[in-house]
Structure formats: C-alpha cells, structure tokens
Length: 293
Length: 293
Image 1 (spheres, each protein chain N blue to C red):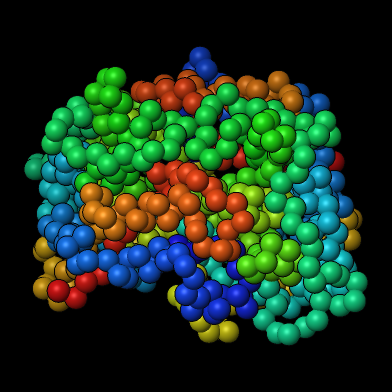
Image 2 (spheres, chains in turn orange, green):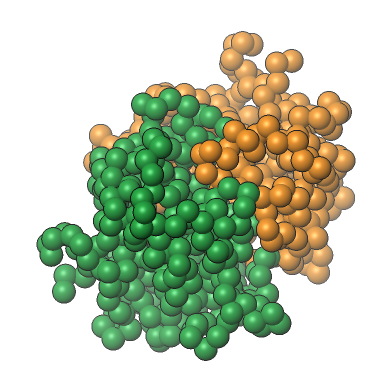
C-alpha cells in the first residue's frame, strides 16, 4: 500500500525517511510475533494459473455450508480444467467450468444462503469508529472486513477488494460454489447480504486483477480462446509440504492492528497536508505476510 | 456495470428479462437526447498506448492552473516518449518521463495546490442523500464525483476509480503535472484534498487497469523494459477530425441521472434479495457514451 502519490524522485527519499511518525510498513516490521497468527493451510484454497498461484483464505465461520460444498467440489477435482470466464473492469473476475460436467454425487446443487449470520458471541468484532455508507457499523471479524447491525443482531462479510464470493442465479439458494468470483475494483457493497462470501485472496491477487477485460455483456469473454485456464484448485493442506501456503495474518485484536488503524486514519506522514481523520473499512485490507516457519 | 454475480447460465436470461423495474442500462437506453451533453474535445486528453487509446475528460473548473500547465506540457510534446512507470495493485498507475528532459520554458515547475475550492455559485452540486465515510456531503459537480463542506464552504473532487491526479513530492506546490496517475482500485479517499485531481478516464480505462503490477516499492517497475511506452499525449481537439474523441456525458441535473441514482440505491432487479437503500458516490461513475455526431 502506497503512502502517497509521490513522483519517482521522491520515492527513494520517502522510503528511507525516518520521520517522527512511523509508517504502516514500519509498524508491521516492528510488530511482536505474537500479534500475528498462522493461516491454517487447511483453511485455504490454492488456484494454479498459467502464470502463478492464487491463495484464498476461507471464512468457514461465515459460510460453513457453502465452504463444505466447495471443498467437496475441490476434492472431486471439479475445478481442474475450469476457466476464468469473466473479467469485468472495476468489478469482478469469475471462474467456472465451461462444459456440462456434473457436480458429482457428493456436492449439493442448492444451499440455503449464508448472506449474513446471527451476531452471536462466537463472532468477535473489532469495530471501526468511522461511519460507512452501507452499514450501521463496520470492522473486522476473524481476519475479514465485516459489518454488524446490533438492532437486528446480524453480522456479515463485506465486498471489499479481493473478497471471494459465490455467483448465483435469481434464486437465493442457487449459489452452490461452482462459480466463484473475486472483487477487482471499487467495493461493490450493494452485493453485501445478497451473495455468500467465502473468503479473501491473500496472495497472487495481482494475477487476477490484470486479466484482460471481457468484451461480452457483464465482462464475459466472447470467445472460448480468451478464457484463462485454471489448471487446478486444491485445498492448501493437500499440497506437498514445500508448496503449502505459509502465511500469517495480523490479529484484529492486537496492539499492532490498533496502531495500523490509527496510522491509516490520521496519516501522520508529512506528505499529507490534510489528515483524513477517518478510514473506510475497505481501505484497510487486514495485513497478511508470508512466513518461513 | 454488472447487475449481479450471476452464473453464466443466468446471464443470457437476465439480459433479456423484462421485469417491472427497468435496469440502469434500460434507463440510459431510453433517455432523452437532451439529458446528455457533448464532451468538448478541447477538454480532453488522448493518450496513445501500444494497445489502444485512453481518453481523459479534464475538469478545468477544479484545477485551472494545473490543467493550463499540463496543456503547455502537451503542446511542448513533453509526454511523447514517456512511460507508465508504476502500477500498484488496488491503487494507481502512474506515468512520467524516465529521462531528465526539461519541462521547457513555457511550463511552471511549481503550482499552488488546487486541492479544493471555494464552493461558489459557479460550482453546481447535485448531492447524494447517503452518508459517506470521508466527507460531510458527496455528489456530482459538472461531470465529476465531488464533495462539499458547507461549514467551511469548500468543494473538491474525489479519488474514485478512474480519476486522474497529479503526483507530487512532499511540498504541496510540487505537483506540476509532469507525473500523472489514474486510480485503478478501491477509492483511495485519504488522498482527497491532498492532491490536485484534474479529470477522469472516460474511455480506455481497461487498458490502464490491466497493466502488470510493478514489483518495486510502491509498484514502480524495477526494470526499464517493464515500463509501458506512451507514444504521445494530445489534446483531443488537436487530433484529425476522424480521430477526435466523440463522447457525451449524462447531465447530473437531468431526470435520467436521478432515475439512475434511484435504481443504484434501491436495486429493484429481482436478483437482489436485500435492497441496499444507499449508494456511495464512488459506486456511480457518471455515465458517458460514445456518440457518432
């Protein structure tokens, strides 16, 4: 995440600048190890594309049934030989099979929607103090941007950049996980509580976001040859040990996360002439970093 | 703009669906011609890239001095042979010269910042009813997303997707227009009132948004060969008649614009199970369309 719109010449200087206020990168670099937690490879999906791999952290607390179904599809190798079939600018990339392959006997064709949940004590919630256009209260639950309505006691995940959801037809229960998408533009928050979100891209997002935009309606590719092939999708824990995703996520309840929020809201960097004093939940992707352990 | 996260199979059906509520595309298709105004080619910049052209509509009311300077640079062919030097995922692409070419005698090296303006009667403002994280009031002024603060009587342009701004160093007056950027991700609204915005991409955005992300700090390309060459940048009115940009923009004060806002806020399409009832200013790119006249 850049700290400004610096000219080329200013970048080198800025990166070595040791001002009074630490940058977000400084805050993360000096954070205690205990403020991070390992991302469990069994809670990730890895997608193999021609130019690299994409890792998705799943959110089973929010979409247990839908994620179970996706895992059944993954185990049945449903996505091997699938394609990115749609890339709509400032919206989403979407992937699916292009043939009529059956989803197999193990997976469900319909699933009751998991658009939101009862905001029980099982859902931690670290609220942001700033107002939001769409929700009464926003913040972070587990490692995901989320919102809560205490009046109706509901909690839900948000369509921020890099979030992964389940395409569906008009029927609310028609999203069975056979078509997934990732957000590649301005957060389409009108989709919140209309689609089951299942996770977020934590590595390789730049492979999805640069895909050529489809010229058909809604950004679907018009010619089969334009689709981007997906070799396979696997559960991270299925991969050989050396290839398993190794990431850690910053705990939303940590002091480091609180320091990041403060830095993002106030922008003490002297480049800023006007402190925003506020931040939108979708402008703080919860930090993730690779780990060797 | 997609109307949902439909599966492939549902798209064909959805596109021919004639429900009770017209879609945004229907509203635009049936709008009176008088609800649109021609975008003056003399108020546009055209950038020639290896794979096509990008058209930027300028906002001279908001940045008269900075735009004057950019036009001097364009007339001096300053940008011919420049490069896209930076592509940071979920943030910006930025272009500049990579050599030490002088800006020439006609252009200024520093310009007093045009981060915001007195909200005089010369600035029309069509307010959105919905709250925003960053500004007291948001809406549209001329053809641009903007915000207003009636307490301090200031108005300013917003860093929504596709907006074009002027990179600068730490000094507020150091943005002289020699380095420009376009927003390619979640609106970085913390930059509002910190940078002079000069316009918005109205055509060819998908050429900028798919550029390979730079692997250097802040998304700068690490090797000169990775930079994307810019053949030239011209004022739209300088081009031969057949190549001049021909677009029209929906008037923010028109009934059609009001109908679009209502549709975007309520989402009457039966695909939606939860009406958002609100919309963020950056989720409504003011409509533009090509015109043959």
